[in-house]
Length: 382
Length: 197
Image (cartoon, each protein chain N blue to C red):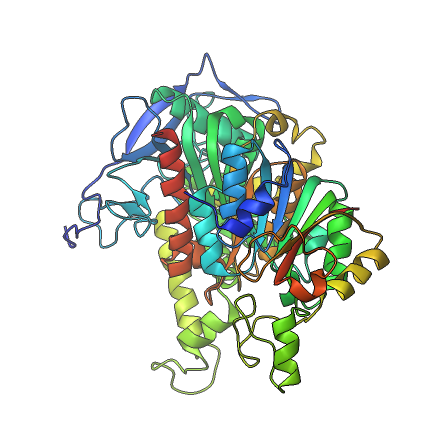
């Protein structure tokens, strides 16, 4: 292992897998149809209390995975939300039991389009069913049930993770005492969908896409997937953040102006695109971006019925320079929940780092989470 | 936790079980008290970041926004009571804010420092800006932007169609003055109004 677990780390962890739906008892999908078997990769940190009342479910974003905290043997970096989760951190694993699961449709251990289709013995490819946010939540609920928990102290997520939390709280308020919806949206704008459309087009136009059967053909749409990632990455950062990091700095390897990597920002994006290929699947990218495109829970006139009778404590946070899901997106969620009589708190966190801010240890952000989680726990231990 | 006396006074004016909107809720002490001992529900609005975090720690729903510009977010008749406690004098647009409050709630509770208090008048006669326990700030660092006397505030209430149901006149020490009603604009350090929209 290249890094020693420092104080505040949950230490070395490993991902587990559980089969939550069988072929004969498949997951019923929102759009009709079924999926089974369904395997889910997940990690847990901390200890579940005897009363099973200290569990916090972490929903990951588009390209996240179950490895939210601690270290996998041999890895150079800890889990993706390690600054949040660990002893003495805002999600203090000395007090909370934290669960994080890989999304179905993903590619990090849970059933997705690259899994084997039992009907054909081949990878699903584009035969994998189109998923909706409710399908992701249904699988989370099955995992929570499997872990012997009837009510979560909290569910938390950023971006697509926050969308799952919103859907979960609206549909099953009895499941979730506290819901934290961070840098998320209740409805993508045309601009948001447009960015996803270009990303998908890049992937599907790659000659190696092979109509989604690239795995069987022994190839991978590397070019398309890395372009998709490069473009998405730009939307995760603010203009100020890119300026601060790169400015107009010329790449040290440039000889003269041309069409290679002339500026350091180009080299950075190329690197982001390249490393993404090692950990992400092109089909998962298609399926999960589509989940986001179709997310629009408040379009359902009955969406607020359940929470009117069983309110959830909501915390909605946005970041000042996020232009992917900016403050307007969060304010719409706040407005709608407040109109439905929900106890909802909202802050716009000052940050220069754009959408990616939700992954960073920004002081006022973490201070808010600490206050919120401490209060949440004090209410169950009363 | 004991509530600050001026907040306790406001709390006692709010019927149990009300849905309360507290504009400028600070660290949420009033709403927390109302939620825990008066079976109220509600929302606080605050713009100071540290106060927002304190309110969240108290378990008070609090929305960080600018009262002066963003009350459109709240719908008509969505609260029983809207509270504006020692905040009206710090607003850029007190007229619009009071108008919104009347739209959002049927009952308003507004507390204000009185610039017409006799010591303030004396200071002005001596050529100095009013300062007192209620108005402790020097002119260059005061958060107060709008200086009103009770008489002129009440004129504004009339213009806005708000009916004064009750007025509690407070001494400069914050004690309710039973006999101060006729000379309120002279003897009051502050006042608390209960208004009906």
